[in-house]
Image (cartoon, rainbow, N blue to C red):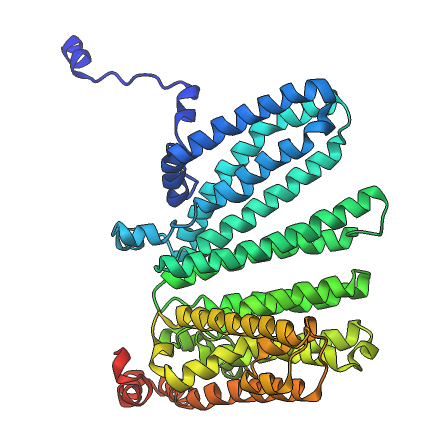
Length: 502
């Protein structure tokens, strides 16, 4: 009998410790594991890895004759192309591909939130980029033994490349939440131009520091740049997560609070010795990105979104700046702009603002951000409640910039690089003001007056349009307190949302 029982009992094979290494840990995000499995099997990653290794070997062979310094340009060219171009581009359709394959609904049925989905997509591409960087580390050491190479300088360069690939991957993954391919391409072109400008600035300042020409980037400025990259990476991923999340999931409040804290911290850095102009420029870029995102959000006054702000008077006041929507985003952008202007007056010599040029550039830059709102809220108001709001904003901004650039080119050819007042009166837009100052050295008062007028009306018209939304917010707060939220929403919905968007 015992022999029969022994025969029927299934034999469980012993599992060696090495068998546990054939798969990913259960502690990792399912989205990260899924993307890693699929990403490392793609032809793009395989070809990029093999070609990079082949070019590194070729670089070493060339360096045997003239030393490692002779092949530095060749070496860094392929590293930068692989890490800052090829790998980030893989995130171009990271989130939108889930919609095209009809798998986004299935993913959202799991416990994965929108943030974990976006972060998993980003982390998978960055992990593969780190694998590529790990593969080139032996060649960095070999170049050092070939002579003429500063090993620590190369390692620092790899650190900046790593930060760059993290940021650019966050750009592509965050922008991939937009379904329009044209919109994503336009945003990536703009981001690429900005990345090139920042990259040239970093290379020049680092070169100056090592060559002894100028002071370059100091320690705290480097720390500030790293913090800025971490913040920008988070913000861009949260931007993509917010676009794919349901309306009841409030991502805007967290983004705006963190951005406000970051802006305040950056404006405090000059008190510990960080270059004030560097801080102001970095803060202005952050406010530009945060402002555009906040003023192009569709408004949401759902009780689930407003309930956390309904307890105290101060929290209800904060809801006017932090809840999702362009109506609160406009106030938030004005608040950030005021902080920037205060930082300019505190940290930069105010005598620089005695000339008209600085005032024109400052006011025109703020007005350029809000100018498309004037056109949208006058002629395309129903779009402000749809998903096409951001795309329309970008389209108008590109058209306005193109018109201003064309006018400035014509003015420089016809009037000797100065804008004629009659020509300016035909195109009194903020970008024309900025070009007139930078190209034509015009400092006439009417340039400043026109920028102030456009800034005033581009804030006034959306503010008037937002009146019914704020009224509904107050009524929702009352409904939350009294317990009749549904009745309040049914009574006010018809007065707020245009018929064409329902």
